[in-house]
Length: 135
Ligand SMILES: CC(C)(COP(=O)(O)OP(=O)(O)OC[C@H]1O[C@@H](n2cnc3c(N)ncnc32)[C@H](O)[C@@H]1OP(=O)(O)O)[C@@H](O)C(=O)NCCC(=O)NCCS
Image 1 (tube, rainbow, N blue to C red):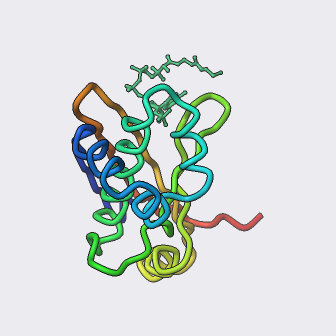
Image 2: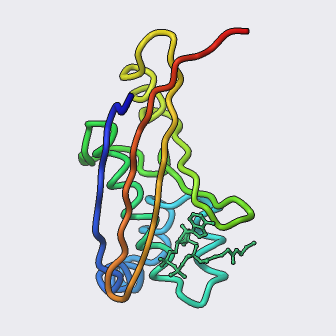
């Protein structure tokens, strides 16, 4: 069953301006070390950050919380499989929220997909609950 969906559209130029203005304060508040390492080694640094920003916003919507002041952004983070497919990881408050919304006897799976076409970066997140089958 589907537990939640979320989407977000982020403006890459706005993220670029925020990176220029706030630098590491912004980077370190929002993005994990792995996310920063990926973005900084890419040619499209701002686009890479913007996709991950959109992913965190979309995930918070799928979790049903939205992004309130003071939440830990790094408790939602994106890595990529070798194929390039993005994977969402949740820790801290986000993991607790995911657990609370997952029915007994089920496991939660977070699906995420990202795209960008300058100046826009977009993310969709779907949270699925699958019955745990014991064999
Ligand atoms: C997946 C693919 C269609 C993306 O197309 P694109 O138009 O260049 O890029 P978009 O802006 O629409 O999307 C980019 C996002 O797609 C996602 N993506 C990349 N590969 C993916 C895959 N195999 N499955 C699902 N999502 C994928 C990523 O999240 C990526 O953003 P990120 O790298 O910042 O995380 C394209 O990269 C492709 O055909 N790849 C083939 C597989 C490949 O070359 N793999 C190389 C490693 S083996």
